[in-house]
Length: 273
Length: 318
Image 1: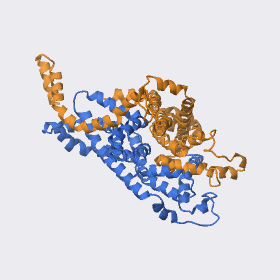
Image 2 (image 1 turned 45 degrees about the horizontal axis):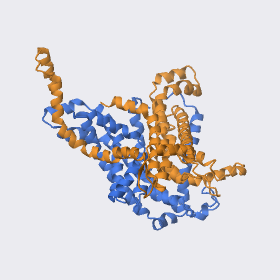
Image 3 (image 1 turned 30 degrees about the vertical axis):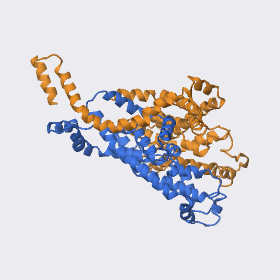
Image 4 (image 1 turned 135 degrees about the horizontal axis):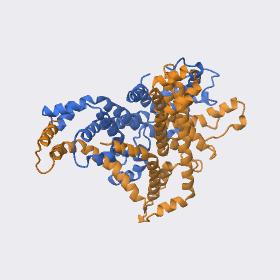
């Protein structure tokens, strides 16, 4: 706190914040009113006409439930895989010695700059030749493979501060590298592993480009929304429901954990409010 | 630990047998740990090879080939690149990418920066407001694209046009996404809406890291809030700003989702960035080699802005 906060600052930030949520409020209100009611704008209330019709009908109109299930499956499996494979590799890179360790590490952690666009042409032709188009693996493999660039970096950074004495003590007690990882390092690294899981879950749930190209029939929510958002129908209410269903889970996860993100950045700089 | 102390003793006693004992310990350790390390990293290496290393090499290789639909592939050397730079559509795409990338980054970081400095005066009271602005960053890009379609709609249900009508300038109502002159800026504003949250949080954290005594001294000396922001917070928050600028530049260069949903690259290809151009050429026109060459150009742009980050990560990789 720097002296007394001037009132105008809070007012200005507050106004900006309310402007910022208008688009979100817009689709929520639109989803709760009949399309005729919002033809002149969702913010006009000549008469009260709230209804849950769209929320009931949308499941019939679009394969929303099926898409939801596909999204849960894709995001869930790839999140679990990343959470399992990342700490193992980060441990090997940080605590073990093996040939070309540093070279491999440098290549992997710098791959974070690569845009997704780089993978789509080769993977599209590869999956087509292998007959993997529309197969869940065509998505899971790149989801997990692309995550290592940042996930290994994140977990290995955490290991920088990991007490080396613990690892040495385990070694003296006769633990091999694998036992040391399983019994000593893994149980003490749950917080970065969950941080990796949350980031991976958000990224895979929201992903549009890869599933749009590699899946045909069972598409996840963002792809379904992309297919219906630009249509010339007037069912703004139902499409808004689809949009809310698409983003509600990642948004809640994000809001619940954003305190931890903020706290994390503060502990790293050593400052407190 | 034990190994090194023994070798220290030996060194002190002057016992040497051929190679230095420290190196011997190291190489023995390397030999012993390699099998375990291989088990632990093998799945990562395999998945990384399939989904990063192979596609990267293959994209570069394909960029030297003319591959269109079912025709027989032909090696063309730098032909695709020559064609790209002769293609007015691609040259226009480069300009669009530049405007989009710099536009979204400048708008997002500038707004986030000012808000972060203001929030630093009242961290507690502004917490809910920060969460509201940060929430936009947590919305799926596909969904924010859909939201902004609703805002830019040309009919009476469009929020922006209604607002303009309400303010008494009916002449300015416009089909924002349907006009090649306004679509790009409409897209930039929509992308910046999601983009402000991260700079806000990063720069806010950087300001929180400024020693309290510095800010208190300014307050004691009677500095007004605006001059505290201008002369103390602005220069001292630069580390956070640099990270925010880098992340936003990288994000804007790779952008695809929001462009696909909001404008589809149109009207008349006026909102196509390089990242969208490669998708269109390779996946809808089936010119794989041509699209790959455009991807390599995108990759070069990404590498140029990422060089400092790459050097830093490489130096820090021990």
